[in-house]
Length: 211
Image (cartoon, rainbow, N blue to C red):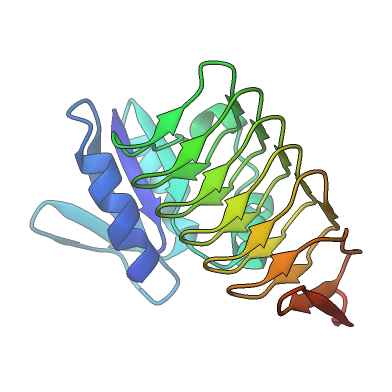
């Protein structure tokens, strides 16, 4: 299977390593709007995001992954491309431990040393970053980013576009509303509304500007 990575920054390097761990996948190009023109280098195609249709036409079997850490940007690109869900792969690092009962959406990336336990459900274009834990019965909606070493204990619910900072902990049954941010190292013991930043131990909230 031919793979195109959308994004050419630090996050894409990690996604590249995950893809290369699967011998059935072959990276054929990178798309990023920092590239003004199309060009090839060492048999790899580079170009702006708008070149996606050219690559679909060029390669018979092709899928995409959006390797950009910013949740809003991932959503904007998904909306812009308007591809069928099956056009996205779901790269999973071989060291990840995932229960057979877990459901994972398209375009979601599972990084090294992640644990996802029984009956958790992840949406589309989610990032589950290095060493993080998503425990049983948790629900993670589309375009969420769970940063390294964060822990979602049982039955946590994350709305669309939520960012969980590195090392944060969410106790059982808490909910975080759409497009809210939990700061690095925070401990969330109460549910958090939408469009809120919550920081500290225990986490306290302040209003964000709407997305």
